[in-house]
Image (tube, rainbow, N blue to C red; front, side, top):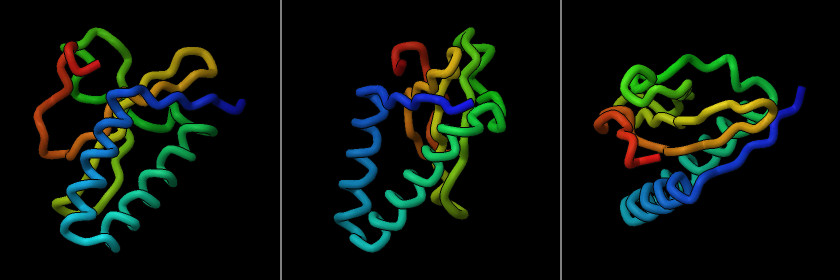
Length: 105
């Protein structure tokens, strides 16, 4: 079953901030990161349930899943929910960053 993927305004801001930071340091790294992000988002269109629940599930009280991408110290978390055939990406965060809080949704 194909899923519709919606990216929240919050997640778009996250992506813009990450890309701006990466682009200042290495435009090539920014391009690679963006391609990796798009590839991960594509997996949500066909198999979002393959990704595990995030650590924040108990705290937030929603079935928030995470898809990891990146390498070594630059691992990122794509945080999303599934509602029927709609997948909503709520945030994109570095793996080392604090857990998502209710105000972040």
